[in-house]
Image (tube, rainbow, N blue to C red):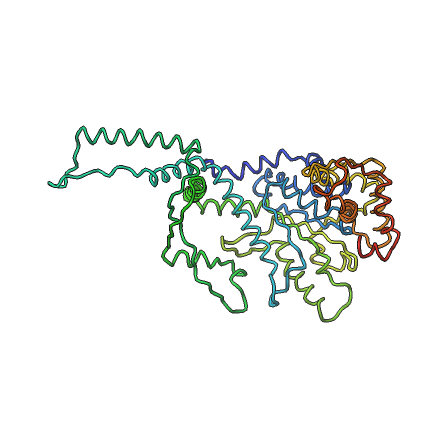
Length: 471
């Protein structure tokens, strides 16, 4: 079996390395608490690999257990999705449920999420295969650049009988040309010619602008207008002056595209989408009816749910790359469900999300951990930003606890927006330092302790009306 055909097997092997406990450990580096949610997504991700190992007759019968994450805003639902996408290295797309409309209304229909996922998978596979042929593409690109700066010798022909001249002079000339070319190639590889400018012929993308009117758009049909007309209209080229460094990149990419078999790329991408694809539907509570029967927005919301149902339970979606089956795509939905409840979703859709996980509201202790433990903790971010300006900021333990206490208090009294409150408080706390650095800063070593936090923030926290607008 060829190397390209092994790609799916390689991806399955990568999944084998990710046991549920390892997935949870990886998520722990960025997300505090929410163990139930982490366990659920870890099991779902591992089940993708387990299904691939089952005998063929049973494999098609094993359907993914879709998940609904329920919890207030700012507790880590979307962050779990973001980290899962990086971790899984599989086709993964995050969409907002509220941006879709029922078929017949102006807006995007729900099938476009599968088309977007397929586009992403094609780009992912293309990037991987480009990497494999990059060395060969780079070599061809260098030869093309050499042909521009040092054109090859054209064989001179005699005036009699059109016979090529072959004598010592010509062989010496060819040998000298070859040596010079090898010398230039070595300089080109070493980057010594990078600043030199050359004329490069590049394809022009002047496709005429065209708008198609009708009840269904080209995007909904999965048609790429540029590709259609690009194949019909004659390809135009234009000359551009570019540096050799830029020419290397342009020609390498161009040659890599030529070396890739796009039919094989599309086949591999569709296979990945169908077997390992994941769709994270955020804000699903926004398309749940609030319980009142009648007309108006609720009708459209239910329409979106009805359109979503066949995709979640398994159907064929037409994309510009061909038909994609959604039977084994994993769907993870999330929502705060403040005004609506999961039971307000239509019963058929509820049945397609059998696993429900409730995420906990964040406590004061959680805020302390969020500020310090994750690899991308807010305190680490602000410290790194100010270090660029040669300002050293040090947060004491009691200062961190005071920030956490204030965040918890404002969430309790105004509106609970979870960990996002920490962003607001940290920005207000350090606003003066961030503004004064580097030219007007009086002290380059600043300690943020409990008293510093109290002096800066207490008046705003105590004034409920003020904190409502500022924090």
